[in-house]
Image (spheres, helix red, strand yellow):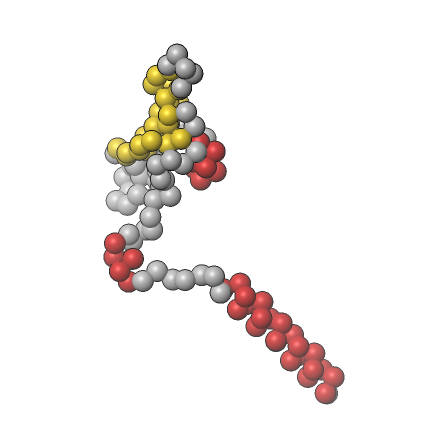
Amino acid sequence: MGFSLNKLVIFLGLALALFSAGCSEISPPTPEDIMRQPLGESPLRTGMTKEKVRSLWGDPDIVNVVKSDAQGMVQEEWIYHGRYPNLPINVDYLAETQHLFFEGSHLVKFYHTR
């Protein structure tokens, strides 16, 4: 019985160590955070690269070239259509269509429409 008990104690110790190590970096939002942003913050930030936006949302539904100048600077509008426009809440582009504007490879502004 001592041999089985030792295995059980070692197993429980390892399981506890793995469980606590996996959860050590997660900090829950404060009640103030939840009241201010109930669904979390938008992942979009001006200055983000096209690659970063694609990694978050995938390819846009529409890409419009707004302007191209003599130096080769291209301005683009990326449109992600809202998938479920009747939802009362919006997460990323779930309910609202997002319009993202890039100069070169960086996001310079964005807004949403219903």
